[in-house]
Length: 183
Image 1 (tube, one colour):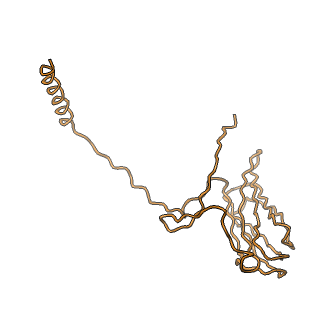
Image 2 (tube, helix red, strand yellow; image 1 turned 90 degrees about the vertical axis):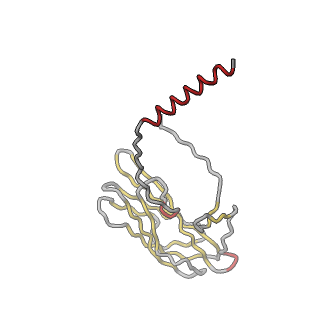
Image 3 (tube, helix red, strand yellow; image 1 turned 180 degrees about the vertical axis):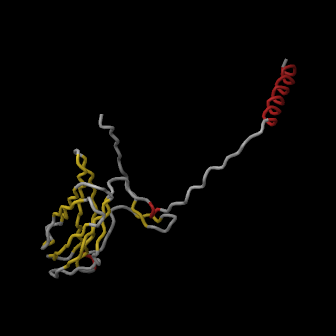
């Protein structure tokens, strides 16, 4: 019984192969995407970028001054920038600024402070872009402020560091993400 079905299966297979090979196939190649490195990635979010002119060196009780610059990608609206500093830093400049986003010019703010003691501090730059119609886009960036030298300013990560194939040192941490549709 087995041998009677084998020729029929073989014949059907040969017909299928012959049918496939008689058809002409057109091959299209997809456009090659440009390779992107880890440095090309920007986190999704508001069209706000922060930069600063801080040189990364401070001493206790000495005055430091530098600028923080925020660039926006919006045609209209109001930008509010809050520079949040820890209590160990004496701030001499304003810590809240408001700008009109209708122009293309970057928004620059002076930062003047001194530190009471050695240590590593962080200035949090909180940015709110009010686009009108109850739409506000917000983001936060931080500036590390090492005051003094040695162990007081040494950065010791709480998690293990890993070297990426590109040679970049990263700290891998677990994260939870929740997505809501607003319904």
